[in-house]
Image 1: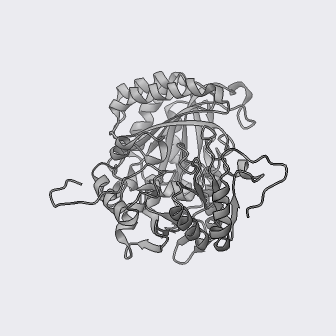
Image 2: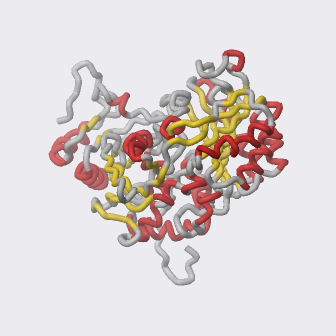
Image 3: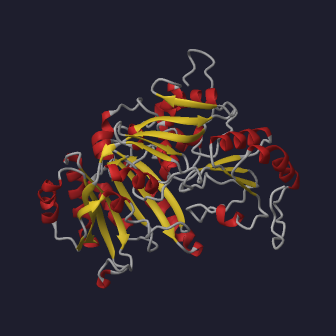
Length: 483
């Protein structure tokens, strides 16, 4: 039987029959920790990055190896439990949790193997990007990833992977060489350029629809010291700065990246006290070229307008990657809205300035991430990620530690998003929007959706893995079927 503490009152969602089945059927095949709602650690373990998500699974299976994952998938399928897959637990919609079902938690699977000679790294599904940077930086190598080092490798990769190195080395999926995947029927398969190639195509942007990825193989790229960090300007320069940045990033060499955002200055020691809680616009730069040329590259940027604060300079890659971890720790309330954008028109800039000046809380923000450069070198059908012609990912997020502020910050995010959506490319990055329904998912994949639905039908015909930006399984019935 599962361990129960004497002090714990049995909760109303405790299922005694499931507990007995776990003890008889799953426990003998499982090495990791199994937690039900009576366990003293249950409430702590079930937490995810977004505290707006508060779900109570019947069972959390904390896997330590592939055999555990296979056992958990088989148990969940045979018991007809709703299954959620947890890697880093960062997705805003909370897909890594479920009510009354089974969470297959990979967070204990932290193995990493670097092959510096081949410039590859094998990463287990429970790693976060800080783990990967720790393992690869002694060799001055890195995988293009995101902007926060506590983000899970699995979720970010399967959705596409936008980050500081996107313009130079492409999306994370453009550096993704293969995976080991536990399918809905419990089989472990390899997916890469020569084995299960349809599955490999789908994994590169199709999200967690197709199985539990227990390990990823990535190509490594030379990255060590970069020249980067944030520069802040006052809000009365926002329109001019956004136009300057837009034009600069569209023509800049691929070595230069930088995202634009609206923020309040945090009351942190690194910032001069006179600027604390002041609303500003910011560009966070990452130049990964020849450091001897960095000052020349940044000369026209600094000549545009003198920044209010300038923290850009030589910085180790892991330091830049983790710079904002402390400002956005786990446990905040998050609400996301997103779009792909081809062009940022002057009219769109006017709207950005209008809504950006109305940040409802100290943590709320809007970011524009460039996805041109190397990310444009693949076609829209080469991977599941469809928007290869888009130049920006736009994300609007209401964030705050206090749930009492959820209503106004959600309304602000929705109003901002609705106002800007007519200037978007139509779809959005699946890692950066909430659970918004099937049409929104179809818009994210466009003409790749039909192929993804067929691959889903092959590898997960019953939609066992549906807690994600879900692609429903669909089999073509005739040549004339548009799907």
